View (cartoon, rainbow, N blue to C red):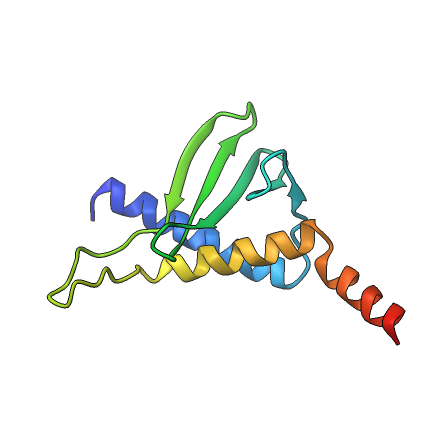
Length: 124
C-alpha cells in the first residue's frame, strides 16, 4: 500500500468516526461563513465538511483536516470510478459517508430538528 492510499484510508476512517460520534451527539458542529461548510474544532485540529449537488445532480463534498494553526493538512473528497461501458460514473463507497456526515453536521449546526419540532408544535 502506498502512502497516498494509507492517508486516504485513514481519512475515510476519520470520516466514519466523525459520523458515528456525530450520531451519538459527541461532536458539535458549527456554521461557517460559507453556507455549505460546517466546522468541528478539536483541541489540536479542526475539521470542515462541505458539500453541494453538482450540475449532474450528484452530491459532491470534501472533508478537510486543519492543524492547530488553521493550515489545511489533508483532504478527502468524493470520487467516482471511470466511466463504465454504460456511460455511468460509479461513486466510491466513502462518498456516502461524507454525504451523511455533511447532512448531520448541517442539521446540528442549523438546529434543524428543533426548528421542525417547534414549528409542528405551533401548528397544532
